[in-house]
Length: 258
Ligand code: XMP
Image: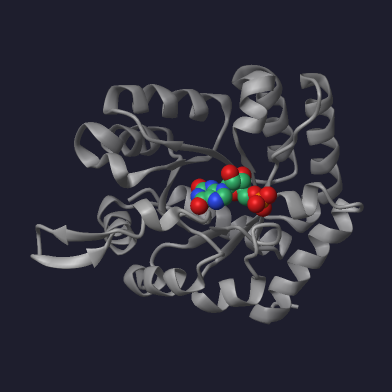
């Protein structure tokens, strides 16, 4: 079971006194502006966050081994673990190449989609993560409106003969496969609760959807989420550092860390 990434996050959480993961989803007219805006936001908020999550917003315009690698280096200099939100979702040999590239560029973990299954699906990602001492975070229930269409389906579990929600089975798979984290949307606290019960506190829940998408810090933490992923509410704020501090303090007040 790859413990390295989980420990890295724990250390960072302690060091920064924060459970906020910044989703650095910067958009601008051209790649140069995206790069400098990303660096500026990182500079402004690094002391209030415990990790950096990057998405295709940066990978596509900046390139993995060009602009993105520089941003990862900067994040690491600030002591921040980095997560690639690629929701890896392909067949095994392609998944391996995807993961290898993200890890070579410096990402400490990536997000993968358990819908593809284990054999010839996510197994190669877990293998390469173990070889390179990196983390794998699995989706269980997404934050958007139509998440119920896939993650919320009732499915027949052939191992037990029972009907279960898809997201509960994904949480069970996270335990079985030794995932370092599970993603459950802040917009569905009742689903977070069920996933948290299934995980028995053994795997931390990362929750996106705080702020713009409607998720609330208190409910999300109370339901059992550990890390809060926040993007637009911070990066588009008039004062990103004050807003990041506010999110951090709200979370810390709730968990009694201040
Ligand atoms: P906002 O701006 O809404 O950004 O705070 C949220 C970030 O999180 C990503 N996101 C998800 N990632 N599972 C994931 O792995 C999800 O259910 C999910 N919902 C949102 C989103 O892409 C953005 O980077």
